[in-house]
Amino acid sequence: MNFKKIIAIVCSMLLLAGVLAGCGNNADTNNANDTGSTAQPAEKLDGKVIIDGSGTVYPLMANIAEEYMSNVQSRVSAQVGRAGSSAGFKKFIPGELDFSNASRKIKDEEAAAAKEKGIEYMEIKVALDGLTMVINKENTWAKEMTKDEIINMYLSGKYKADDKVLWSDIRADWPKEEVKFYGPNENHGTYEFFHETILKKQDMVKTANLQQEYSTLVDLVSKDKNAIAFFGFGYYITNTDKLTAVKVDFGNGPVEPTLETIGEELPYAGFTRPVFTYLNVNYAKEKPQVLDFAKYVVSAEGCKRLAGQNGFAPLPDSVYAEYQKQLDALK
Image (tube, rainbow, N blue to C red; front, side, top):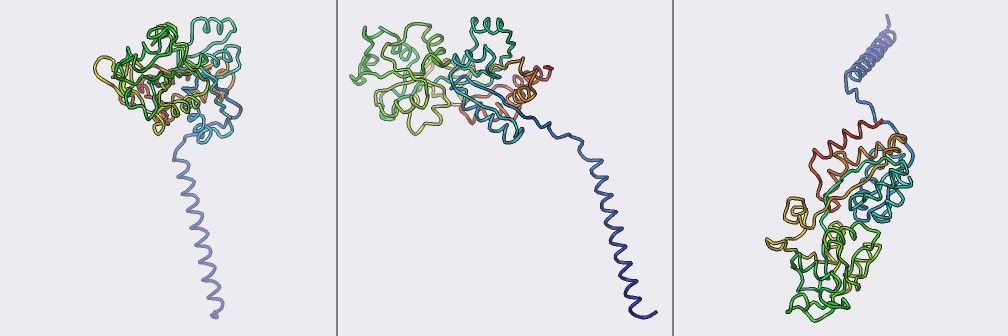
């Protein structure tokens, strides 16, 4: 056998060994796949999820929607509005929304109207908010107030018949300058919470300037040394460079609203309230993307993770787990 034939035989043997080795590797890979994770990828959904309502809840729900579309269901369009709690229920009751966010519980008359329209809903408490009184950065005198002082200054006729209250009416050593009252308007659950729960449904000062947009309130207070306003903690925490939060004395010394003090059994309990979203159960049963989004809201990746990032105190894990069970039971 000459030298060329020997070289050819050796090359053929090396080539065959390589093919067999490749086949062996493929077989091993296939076996590994067969014995590996059996988890199925999430079902790809599409369609819309329509959400509106509370301006207070808006930042949290918008963040949840963004994360859901980015990380879970890229073909689902989750659209979040901020018309206000009352305005949201006006859309929810006729069936225009899949979810209605609210910074207060649904009222009896709203629940009755929903029932009359055949709307079955599920109330989901998403987090806890701390009603926050904010003042201008240049206000150096009202950084601490008692709960009663806050209530009384916002009550019509408490200090002046024309409601043109001076800071010195509240405390004699404060400036003799007129207080400029601000707050969200009647479309918002924050207004209703303040009026109904804090003021006990007594008339608010006639000089109060009530606004639809929270960003407008931030701007107005930031430009007026004598201004004071109320809204959710989340809007304050994103504007600490423009506003100062009033520390409120509920009877045991001034308490600053923070994620560590806001809670139904914590130092800021006097101004703590739950916030909600209301799910249209009819649509959750009809539209897979609506039910899937609802499950994400109460999942570990939803409210539990994102509440604190948006200025809300998250609820105990057991609360979210119970909502998951109720949603899993929907068919």
